[in-house]
Image 1 (tube, rainbow, N blue to C red):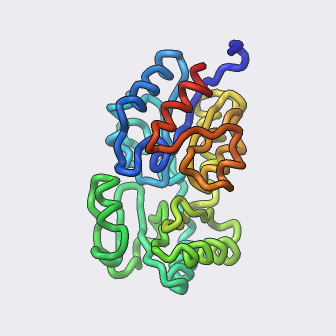
Image 2: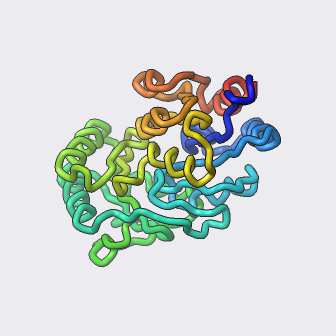
Image 3: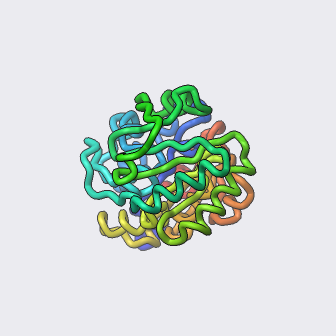
Length: 269
């Protein structure tokens, strides 16, 4: 690869991409990141996770650059101190909560530090706690919290209802929010400037790397926005056909070392 064509920054999604379905960061994935950093290429992660939910990646991957939590709603340093954040407008957060309830979904609320649920035994709460490695706080009412919301999540195992809710939030809240599914059962709602396309733009400016020298890799519908902004885009083998079509390259699944293979083949080759 000619010097002028080299990737200077890799931005990786976490769940469904960097880690396996069991949330394991494999040794081959770690080694791929080590090779990237050794080659002088910057590496960081972006996710719908809260900042604290990515703490376990910092040391194993040797992360040195800003991390984009909440799909860019909060940018933190590797020590998790906040660089800057985009909170949801309070009126829009209230409206989104009402729409989520109308569609029969549970709603979670995240601030930059805390995670609130209305029911401790609601679907996916245990799984999320195991994933992010910290427990939620139970708040039957979110009154008094909506002015601090960095992200809302609509949660349901009725995938069609989640898709309908996504469309309804986008239609009724307009440009007041960014709403997209990070998983078939999760609808992430953040500030309009908190999306993965903006993550590429912000990190490009922060690290002084042209967008065309950035490689992005992900598996979800919300990763398509960063695909559009980066010079190299890679979809995981476990991504939907729609997501795969939006990327320049497709690797194997996250159960088949797809992240490491993509780094070896499309970034380090």
